[in-house]
Length: 306
Image 1 (cartoon, rainbow, N blue to C red):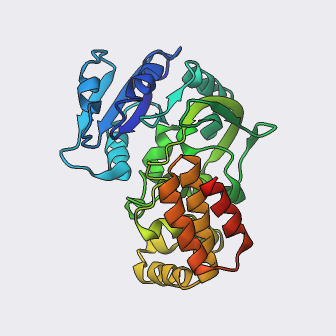
Image 2 (image 1 turned 180 degrees about the vertical axis):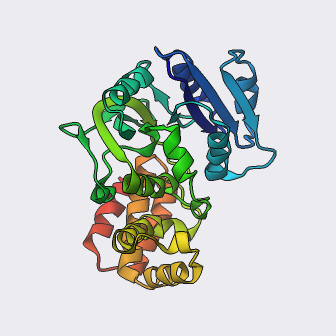
């Protein structure tokens, strides 16, 4: 039986951590080590974690808030399983998730990683399946249209040993796991399983959806640029530590009022999806300020207001 390392980074997840952790503990595949890193939560998350006595659980706590990138990388460095899966502290898994994925790996010894369809859970607890018509092997070009959220992945420890953890440039931004998937697809066979084994909770206050640093607006565009660089030259600005080029790329984007307006419009819609209406209103007004002629801005404004 293969040992599987379950990586769970948590921050202020007192409402959801039991559901997340219980779904890991009660997997039909029981040979697990569950590595939980609390990123200095200021709610009851840590107290709840301490109530669990299962010897498969290994708890760690940051003295100060270090962010999801550093917390996950710390846990990955502690992993000793032949396989690794990531699970967020407010998400949960079907109880046969690990067993099902291990079966995929047993049928393809050359497979490096496998991601799956998932259920997107809104703030009212309603779930909607996000899937594709078929299962298939991915190619590098699929980074522009990833069929899974990276948290659904299972990958071999040997893949992590080669690629390392998440790049710290993306700490505090978004898409740290998407850049990792770009590097994954360069070197390893990756399979998409059209089976919704993971429940992804849409949280408008999460790092993915929050307003925060302006640099978050360029993260996905930057990754697309980095992908094109790697396809043409085998490396990119992040790998070369070319901070000047990245800064110029950001400057060019931020000077484009049409692009900036559309980014704020998208962000306003996300906040409205999460019932953050007043935050959404402030953001959509900013989008209109940058591009008052864009009809879609007013469509989103109507959505925010009504």
